[in-house]
Amino acid sequence: MTYLAANKPITLPELLRMKKESEKIAMLTGYDASFAALEDRCGVDVILVGDSLGNVLQGKTSTLPVTMDHMVYHTECVGHMAQRAMCVTDMPFGSYHESKEQAMRNAVRLMAAGAEMVKLEGGEAMAETVHFLVERGVPVCAHIGLTPQSVHALGGYRVQGRGDAAAARMKADALLLEQAGASLMVMEMVPADLAAEITRMLHACPTIGIGAGKDCDGQVLVLHDMLGVYPGKKGRFVKNFMAEAKSIDGAVTAYVKAVKDGSFPAPEHCY
Ligand SMILES: Nc1nc(=O)c2c([nH]1)NC[C@@H]1CN(c3ccc(C(=O)N[C@@H](CCC(=O)O)C(=O)O)cc3)CN21
Ligand SMILES: CC(C)C(=O)C(=O)O
Ligand SMILES: [Mg+2]
Image (cartoon, rainbow, N blue to C red; front, side, top):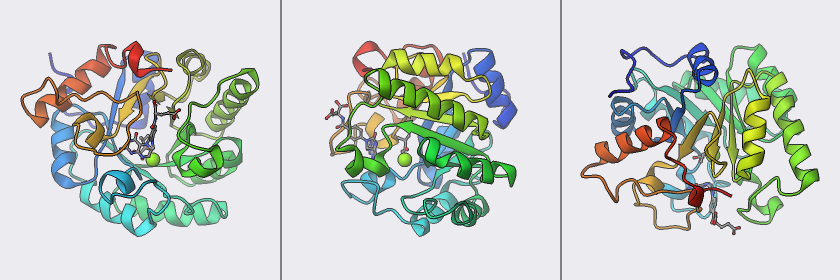
């Protein structure tokens, strides 16, 4: 069985159709042309040029030192390599926090470099910025739960949304971001039950989980984590798909299949 629907490019309506028809969305980070082509031919739906490149390419201990110039460079490396997959790029720390105008100016650089959507971290505080970009033709992926650019404010890489008050706040954030026009919503390190509830609550915005349980509309992992080549500390949500594969193509294909058939994530990858 192949998941490549006749090489038809992934568009916003296609992502929404996948949510409506419960067809899981497979997202994976990618930072260069060779891996972008590989992921595309293995059926990855969305390639994320993640600011996790600070960790996996640059050897930093967080994503905070990543700059706009770094993200533009890697987006140029990935953009236009994929025939089918959509290219989404993370806006780095500090590139969208000053004002909605600053966010637009930097989003324009990423879109010109080849991104088809930009991703930014935050809840209610970012809703106005999301709306501003969306109204001006920039599709936005939101990112809630553990937002790694706020690691020092959050006190570490911890599960978010535990307890009634935190869960209620996350649900309110998700609704505001959907209303603001977000096209996708990453949820990171969120209890599986809460992520499932948010996924059911949202009708116009597919959710993509990383440590957020199996009931999200899709899943994302960091490429170097799922290939087992990242030497740093990994979350329990990571699975090494290279362990049982004969090639990198095989590992990425197995990841896509496991996301599509719902076998990844398993309970041991969830909170
Ligand atoms: N290679 C890589 N993979 C990632 O998933 C990732 C990055 N880099 N960089 C940006 C953030 C940082 N992330 C992280 C980093 C560490 C944990 C972690 O150590 N989690 C453990 C401990 C949790 C705890 O202390 O409570 C876990 O069991 O999940 C989780 C997410 C996720 N993102
Ligand atoms: C892990 C994903 C969601 C991310 O933001 C990144 O790779 O930077
Ligand atoms: Mg990121």
